[in-house]
Image (cartoon, rainbow, N blue to C red):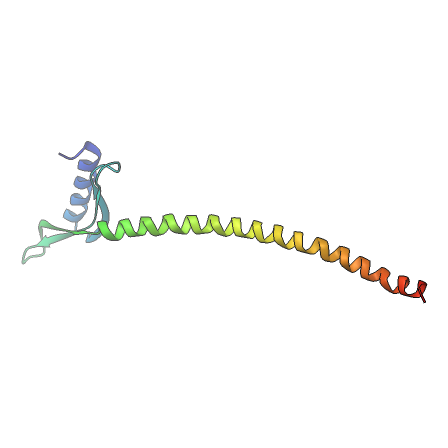
Length: 120
């Protein structure tokens, strides 16, 4: 049995098709915490020989596998973005840690000619 909201959406979609509109919409069945199935539902008015709408044909295509793969891709994309931010922070830290000793070495190398003059 459909819940009231789902029933209202189904009726509205049926009414749109009865008014002559051809359209497709994504829908689902089942609870998110349990097993949920996803569909592309197409609504098409049926006309008689005189062009009057006499009914509606509804086709549903199961897209559950595709939808679950999209959700998994979105999850991994988010994780990857977080890892990239973490990697950028690490790279900045390593870069800073490597530059610091180089600045010290460069400074000491600047004193070397003075020290060499002193010892001659």
